[in-house]
Each structure stands twice: as C-alpha cells, then as structure tokens.
Image 1 (cartoon, rainbow, N blue to C red):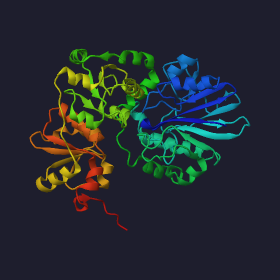
Image 2: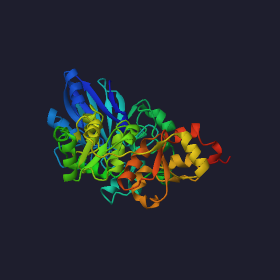
Image 3: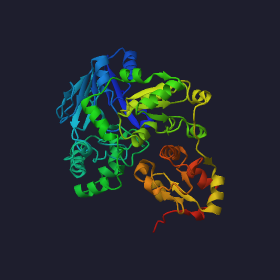
Image 4: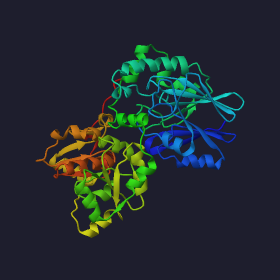
Length: 470
C-alpha cells in the first residue's frame, strides 16, 4: 500500500494522499488544495473523500475547498458537529477507496471528535494508522486546547480520555503498523515531538513516554507538565474549521492587489490595516515604513503571525520581496489571516524611491555586544523562550519571550538604553519592530543573536547554565 506524506516544514504539518483503482482520498489537507487535485489528476483518479482527524487549531484545513472543487465528501469522526455538509463517521465505520479500506477509530482526548484512521490494503492487511494529533512520533496531542472553545472540556478531562484512547484503541493494534501523524517537531500541538515524521507503532510502544505503563494520574501529570500557553489564534482556527470560511480563491483575489506607494499610504490611513513587512531582519533594519511590523517570510512565518497578531480578521497590508507576494498571502491564509488588502508594488524599493518617510533599527555585532557588555553593563532583554533562557543565558539578561512581549511592555524602560537579542536574530527583530511601533527608540539588536554571542563574544564565565546534580 502506498501512502504519500505531503509535509510542509514551516508549519510542521503532514497531509496524506492515497489512491487505488482511480479513487483517491486526502487526509488533513492544507488550505491551498490545488496540489492535491493535481496529484489525483496525475493518477487519473477522483478524490472521493477528505478525511479530517479532528477540528484543527494550528491551521485552517482545505476540506471545504476540496469538497467544492472535486465533489469529495468530508468525513469527521464521532461527536463532530460541523456547520456544513459532512459525514460524521461511527466508531468502526469502514470507507472504501478503490481496493483499499479506511476504518475510523474514535480516539478522543486531544479533542472530543479526534479520530484515528486505520489503513487496510488491497490484500485486507492492516498497513498503518493516520493518527492526527492523537499520537505523534515521541509524543501525543496536548489536551488543553479544546477548553479555549468549550470551557467544560477541561485539560484534566481530555487527558483522561486520551489515556483511555491510547490504552484501549491504539496499544492493542499490531506493532508493525506505520504511524502517520499530523505534525512533527516544531508544532505547538505537542511539547516533545520527534523530527522523524513516521515510525512503526511497535517502536513507539517502546520509546514514546505516553505509551509506557503508568496509572491514569501518572499519565495526566506527565502529559500536562511543561505545556506552554497555546498561541492565541488556535481557538479562532478551530472555529473556522467548524463553521466554515471563504474560499482561498476569494482570499487571493482580494489580497493580490499591487499598490503604488501613494495608494498604499491612502489604504493604510483609511483603514485599520496593520503593515506587515515580511523581508529578512537585516533588510528590514536598514529601512522600513513607520509603524510596520517585521515577521520574516523565511522563518516560521505563519506561526509567528498567529502568535503576534491577536485577531485573524485583522486587515493587513503587505511588504514582501518582489515575487513573494502570493507566497506570503498563502501562508497567512493557512492560519486564517484572510484579510490582506494588498501589497506594496515592487517592494520596499518603491517606497524608498518615492521619498516618503522611513525608519531604521540599529544592529550590533557580537563583538560590539561584548565590548558594550564589558564596559557599560547595559540592560539586556532576551526574547527567546523560557526553556532556551533557562538552558543558557547571559548573566543579568532579562527574559521576556517574544510571544509575551505585549504583556510585559511596562517592564521595558523608555528612558534607558538596552540591547535585544534572541537565538539568531529573527525573533528579536520582530520584537524590535513592535517596540519601535509603540514608541521605543533607544535600543539596538544583536545580529546573529545568542548563537553569535556564545560563539564569538562573551566568555563562558558570563553565562548562567543550570548544573545537573548527580
């Protein structure tokens, strides 16, 4: 049996495609669906079903557009209540895909409707399980997301259900089944996912902490310890996946509007649009439109947009490198930001040529940082995650993780110079652009971030590293 995994690294997301005798099915598709349609066309196949493992929180699925464009039927697991036409499968229900079969196994815990799909080949042999966010490689799905949509679905309740699902539905399955999860390392849907994107169930039974022998209470403690606050856009994406959304074609038509600097300025002044500059941090620092925010397209763009822009319905004006406009709009739409109103024609260079106002952000090298640190002992703000900071940091640096910066602005002085850094320069420039927008001016950013600092500048005696007691 051939299962094609379609992995999108910037979202740590895996969709799946299977085909048999001219009949195809897609599992957990991304928002842009043409690639799945093209794949089926290549096989001279018709997409019969779009299987959803659950109502996703970290991306907007492409199930509705696939349904509209191909006539495929959408399938959810038990308890799902979508606001559109779909099959709500029964536990154990079997679907035929040519000579293949797909069996729905209800595995609540990550969400109430979470369902694992057992793949059965043309010889009636069980091949693998598409597990969604029920089982990852090295981890399981966090149970604290659904309560942000339905308050009664507490993390404790869902963790208990997940324990039962794993013990009663997953562990009894054959060891040689291949596990096909919805996410890999980097996703916020778990806390310790492997970089591997498939494995055998037998190996997961040996190595995955959540599948080891333990009581339900021990499982809950292991699962819930160390969970970070989920990104703010997650509940909004869940609702879009439940209630429906505009076609991506509509979103693209609205957003692919090239604006001259004059037109761009008029739209910015007449709307509440946020100006989002997607260029690299180094280019942004050299010159940018006043009040714009930098979230670089080359990093985890969609995830940081979701972290830093609270409302998915926010109007957005884009600045990209020429030729990157469609990519930026597509990646915004994957996480539900559907209201881009246009982009700056010919990129930032057209703004420069127009002679309109622009701003810059100062950056220093690791060597300059060392000199300043030694002679002036400046205030240092480290915007990495707490876990990164706890692992190793510059002595006396203040940790304000990027995704929490808006809640800690009162702790950042406006009358005292300071230095920003992250791990490599991406997140600190996001922070710098936000601070600049809010009126901070007396600061600089470290090029290359903590990586450069640790390798070329501050001696190890000026780091704080936790000591392991043996």
